[in-house]
Length: 565
Image (cartoon, rainbow, N blue to C red; front, side, top):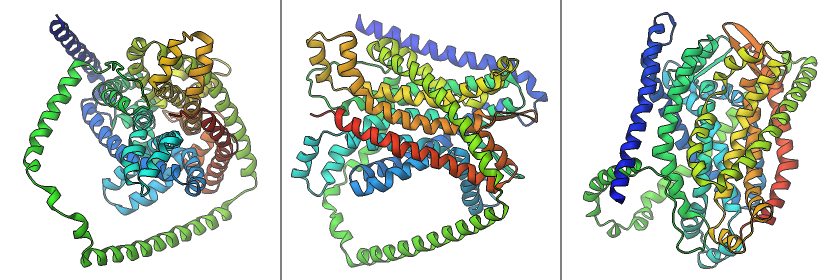
């Protein structure tokens, strides 16, 4: 009976996937007729565009993962390093993706001036900047949240720290890495359009990808192609969620702090996905078999690396690295002073007033969006946490919604809201909301899911329900994640200003006064002084809020609500 039910579920899942592909194909066949008069857009190349975008996303994520764990680990394991590294991370995550454009173009494209490789590397770097900070904060929060008695036990048995790294820090970070990676991927998709098409002055760069397809369609006001691009992106995200993120999320549960025995693991992965990964696992095992016969233990790697040759190579590499670091520092300082001098020559006092007014208007929009975001994301995350079956159905759709590039909404919002008096203002607030709400929602839900099972069982055994359960268990458990979500959401909001306050549709600009619009116009008009002042002012303001408001509050909350074993 059970085997029959499993088989029917498998058939049903296959039918759903086939139907999903059929819907995309129907849209594709419908839109192919208008491709003849759409300049520079080839609808028949849509699968190729998705493939190119996926390569950029995976490449950026690989480097983001390496950077994030290293950075978060180093910051969380030393008070001295933490005092320097966390403020730097606050600054980096508060820089809008547009602020990295000059760096990406100047560095990567100058390395390969006559090759597409430089543009590809610049695009990957820009996607990396939209993915990495959130994961780094997650690693930092995970390591800082490890119970003190567990840390002390490892320090007693392993003073050198190698065992602690493998058996404590990495496993403790995995749940947050996986959950924050889902948010980071959504953010990467969100800013993909800005990473595949960018322009500075007279130079413009465009790469084939789903982001550039959606952007060109939106700016040319071709709503049919925008919807087709969004649908194709949604299907891609659906398959990634089903075959990658759901299995990883279920696997990450093994690393939660819990002393409750015999908990039945809730299955969230579909049968077809299990069959797929079992097939992949069998292939990997066959590849591994010849290597299993080799006795690696007989090879004394420590003795080999202690040889004179390797000791000499190590010393040479240290000196080479030191010399290269000094030369790079001198190079950066030279061009920094050169840039400051160039900017000072073209600086005008009126720029200060323009930037301050723009910051005030943008701040009011961000605060309005934040109030709206918190008012629905926190209650809804708690609702889904208490109703896991509904959550399993809704979360994939939320992940798709969070990944849709904001610029694709703009033509639709303008069409409906522009006739109203404050329609443009309202549309910009809605777009800022799309750039911040998902951080809070997903991180709050992740914080709730990390509640140890034994705590839940104690609460349930005493029959604690309703408001008392909310006040004594759920809110304290989610507060550290909520504050991390707030910090990253604010960074996401300031990033979203770049696309929320300014867009050009068929040569007609639509904008509201704000720092995002100012960054766009000053960069397009190559006004370096105004762009630099706007960017530095924005970064300084966001950093000040993080450093003087969020960080002290976060330390107090973490100290009070840390889960002790």
